[in-house]
Length: 99
Image 1 (tube, rainbow, N blue to C red):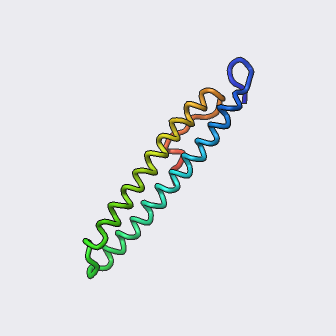
Image 2: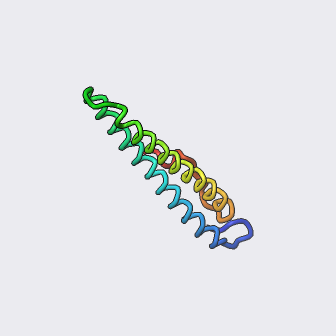
Image 3: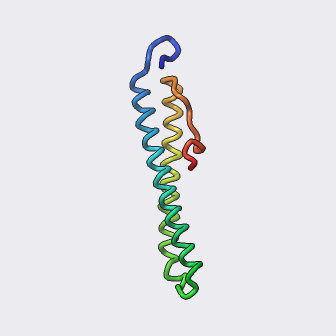
């Protein structure tokens, strides 16, 4: 795809695809962590004999990990969109990673 002026900015195109991959990987990690957390919480709900206190630290850790992945995803999306402007590619949003 060519940009204004008729020349392709291949460096920006490379950055676009690298950051797009990073955003997708971070979105996948966020999904996986939250999906696993949902399973853990459902298991707690279904087993009234299992003490919640035993799981609290694991839940907090999972939430912190999901937030880190979300931050990485959001930052990478910003970089994708900056590169998109320079190489004529489509800008993206978090909606592009919905399942």
